[in-house]
Amino acid sequence: MIALNAAVAEALVDFKKRVDALIAEGAVKTSAILKVLRDDIKTCKPIRFDGNGYSDEWVVEAAKRGLDVEKSCPIIFDRYMDKETITMFESLNIMGEKELEARNEIKWETYTKKIQIEARIFGDMAINHIIPIATRYQSSLIDNVHKVKDIFGDEAVELSAENMKLIKEISMRSKTITAKVQDMIEARKVANRIESEREKAIAYHDTIEPFLDEIRYEIDKLEAIVDDEIWPLPKYRELLFIR
Image 1 (cartoon, rainbow, N blue to C red):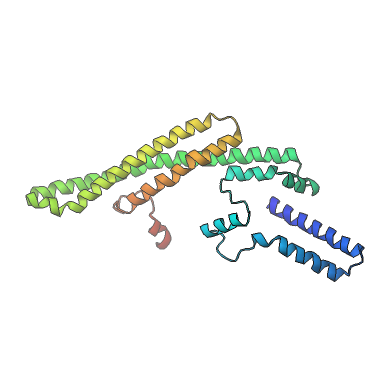
Image 2: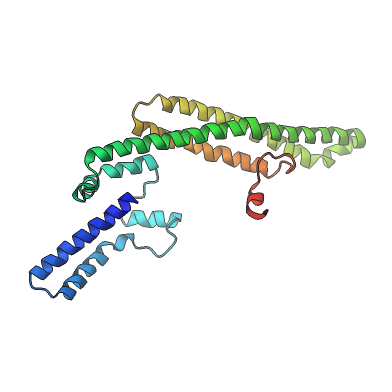
């Protein structure tokens, strides 16, 4: 909000200066205002978009228009140290360059800590909550397969085909989750040795945050097949529809 309000304030100050300059040259006030408005409408054309601003299509379109489409939060913080940004904050007596530098250090550190906490909790939940429950359900399926075999003999292969498929899927997804959690832990160890707060935040974004989506994908697949009665967390449909 500080940045947005500063940008609006700077635009209004600049607007008034240009209008006053035209009036000083003899232009009628209304005509001067309309002239500056026309110029500003042309200037801001690249940022005007009537479609879905959250879509991938807008990212492509924005790049064509020469707009910044960077998605890495730690790198986006660099924009606070652009010459134009510093000038804006200083000219409005909001913050100086040193204050902006200090705030950026805090932003990078905060970003890192948030991802670090999320990764630790997520890893703990995956290994100590999700995997054990998936294994318990898998064991019940294995027990069922053995019982079907005892009763139906050779027919059990066909009768238990679906359960066998689930047993295998649970094993593969559990193995993937365990491996990715361990890889995420190792990536954290590497990132934690970086002294620069900026570089550490970038490392967390580039090498650790992607694991969260990858692990979540596997857990989502397990959630879809494990028995509701033993699944330890609310499922998506329960969060959406159960009151």
